[in-house]
Length: 280
Image 1 (cartoon, rainbow, N blue to C red):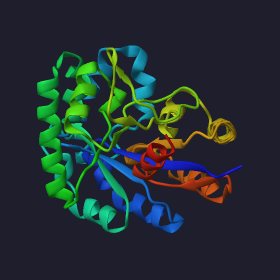
Image 2: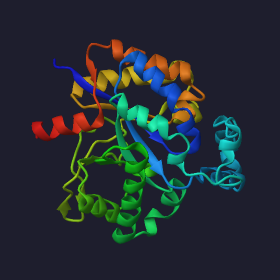
Image 3: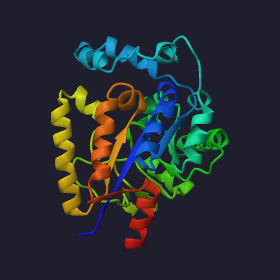
């Protein structure tokens, strides 16, 4: 049976994430993995999520597990500080490009995107994406040809905007089972932009859902078996502030196991998208 593509997608949502990129890049270099980084641009206001937890007592435990104050002043960006994500460590973005990783856009103003996308029309979304592209391409000195919507938030207006900008591919969906790359429907029409979905929840998300370290490793091993049997690309995603900042040992172990699994070969999402287009 031929090798199955595997990919690691890194979502950079905040200043905290950017601050941990050098440590993550060291791990990827050691394992000889080329990853896909989706970078948020614009103001980092994720600390404002604290007010959501305060007003919803049921989410206290999840809030505590996320270790919200572990990065000092970076943790308060958006409340006591005002710093754009891409400005925190531009040399890390340049290093990622220099070392052969793929960079894609993860929207503009992550907090506003997550909370207001449902009310945006195509014109407003295109405006934000264009602003994000201009900002990221200047900061990273790289051409950006892919997109991933923050929080996997998707509307018809978003899909129309992505079509209009004509990305090479996008990664806006997270599947609950083996899901091949696909072209989503926009009403009765098919989108022109291929979607490469994420395969499962991140390690940090699984921890907050109550899974133990052993259960997480077992779940990922089972997913490897199923995805390989179906011949579907296995796309694992992570956030530096969680997987590197809190669960580095487990995260590194999972990547090491995948590297040593002869059934899989690591590619960037751009390479997977290109292979799928040729195959289709």
